Length: 113
Length: 108
Image (cartoon, rainbow over all chains, first blue to last red; front, side, top):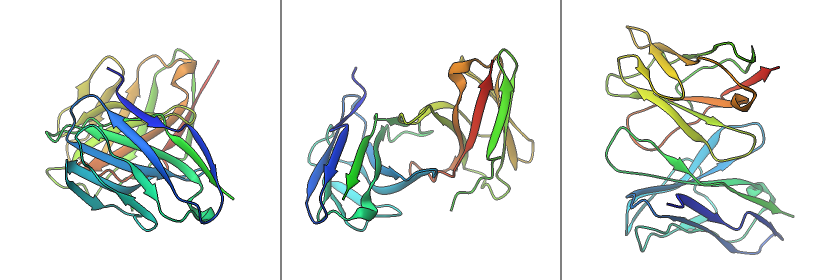
């Protein structure tokens, strides 16, 4: 199993540009989520999904969109990038059966200039 | 806000046990205690979890006090590769709230 994969590993955007961060998992997990991590801080939840077709907002959803058309994929879209969105983004997945051992991807480091 | 309080940083000598404390005085009866770690800038890695009883796996032991208001993660023989940020998380559901964690430095 590849686990949770994320692409790209690094990305530089100009203010106002849009892009999609990709996340995929091959463990047939129902739950998937996106976190962002700013320097020296813990992770903060952006959006999550408990199954295909179901998404919801986390703690810091503004400026981001998600959709979940398949169990495997959970892309994160930045609509109009801002310097405040410069961060490292992590995708995670787990079964919907608790307790929840979550598997995290390697992260995407995004810089917005 | 995170429901846990952890020391900002700790040092441990290589080969010794590393004991990482966590306070979670407002924990509810159905909330689990989870420990994750983040090595350098990699994605967080699951270590262990517990509800009431002490737990042990191949990586670590988790000691939860009887009143469940605090816990300790024990790495029995720390190595240099255990240098990381360790997060203690209290949660009922899957949406975790991460605090800043404890930065553990294992020293040769």
